[in-house]
Length: 174
Length: 152
Image 1 (tube, rainbow over the protein chains, first blue to last red):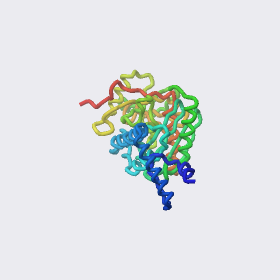
Image 2: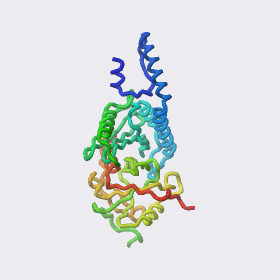
Image 3: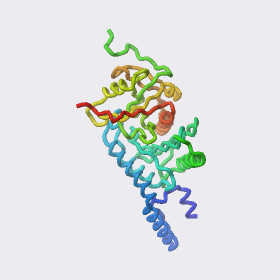
Image 4: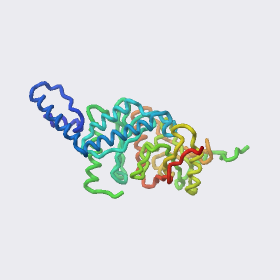
């Protein structure tokens, strides 16, 4: 039950566990999960992925810190959008591909994944936790809005999973 | 009376013409993939996207026009890249490119961005358009040998 709920919320393995359970077995389980999380964070690959993404986010925030940073009158990156983007990245499954990070001219943070020609996903995270996204597979495009709650929104995780899975099955040269 | 260097009337560009979007930030393109990112085409906070009409121009001439758009303030003092977009790609997204020569000769505005009252819907729709432009194989990212910096 606990496992299925965690998967359903699509939280990442490096996200600190949040639980209100008070039983001894629940406490023990939480300890084991935390040990696994710390072990995972110690692993070179996961640490590199997470640190690299968060570092890119910080660099983007620095670049987008003044009004007009894009040369066309863009708003600075919103501090709350930055915090929400961190939560999003920390909540991503450790097996997910790393996004490219940029800033939108309206103050949102943008995360982009590209899986080859016309296979891509773009998500914009706002100060309120609104996640506007669009993705394409060949000539078809899709779009939607979801909300950052306890981890990556399911609709976005689904799109990402689908694109990543198809690319793994049929790698495309770019 | 005609003002030197300016057209009298705006002209709508045809599908075979090309508009360059100048990128003053490293954040809006991927050097690794050599592609513009969707954010490069987001016109916010306006409803028109600025570009340069570059049809038929040699590369050094395009960079020289771009250089003249630079200003001595953060955000406009370095050019990192440009994205060359055939007008056909804008038309496929139901946008139009208009050569208006304002505020400088060869300035073009990409207009027709859908105005949707609901901000969430507008954001996702614009995102869809920007993603399609950034992924179009006909859209080319062009990098200068070194970033173009403002002359002293």
